[in-house]
Length: 73
Picture (cartoon, rainbow, N blue to C red):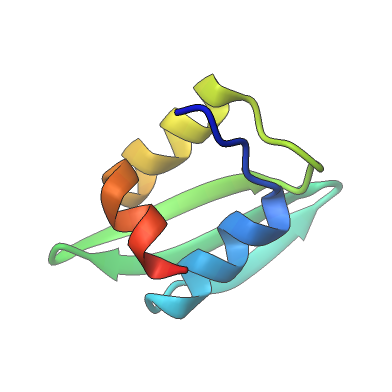
């Protein structure tokens, strides 16, 4: 995972696959959606660059693999 993604890129990608923005508190956006037949809630910090560990957590929350995420763009 050498690429770092911004919060805006991550939110836009999740919106493309059917997630919706539920709320925002400060710099964190909460999205809700159904992926792989499971209801999922994902919290995304709206930072210029999301840390690798945080991005990994976002992938786990959303149910996406890195390859699936990259193919959304």
